[in-house]
Amino acid sequence: MPLSNPEQDKRKALYAVDPLVPLDQLDPATDLIDPDTLSLLVLMVCEVPEESLALFRKRLVPPSQLRQQVAAREVELQRHMLDITRKLESMGYEVDSRVARGSKTGQVITEVADREAVNLVILQRRRQKNWQRLLVGSVADYVARHIRSSAHPHNHCPIMNKACLLYTSDA
Image 1 (tube, rainbow, N blue to C red):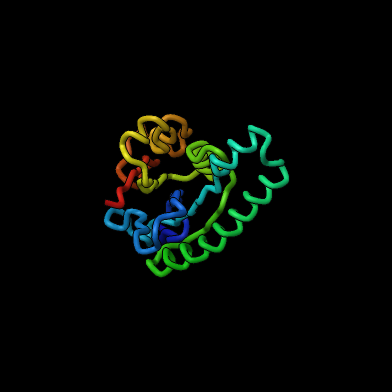
Image 2: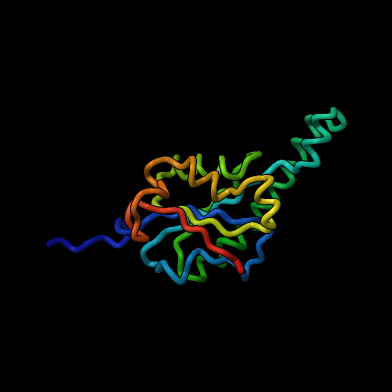
């Protein structure tokens, strides 16, 4: 029987990180998943601020200014992503990272998860209160309903078998 290649045996997880979560609160489910069995694709979504969108819709902000704001935010997130990548690598994870633009976080997460054919999606709880989640909607709920088969949360999944949605809490 041939020896297995550890690199081929690694599963790929998309770890969606909230840009405002402090570095010491990063937790890609270390209690459940060994870094030796999982490579992380860390994703941070660069959202267009709602205030800027509202001003743009009222024609109070020109498109060029809105593009500049988003580009500046993206650069800021790229810098922060370097710190996140270093922190996760120091925890023993193999890390690839992306900052993606989008106005709907859940949609961006599902698109990247489907495109990258990840086995697992890890979401950290955002800063929303229950009433906000009820009004605005839950990113985890959106991802659970829209992700395709390779990482479908409704499939039976012992942690490393053809994937589930893991929703971790920072509390």
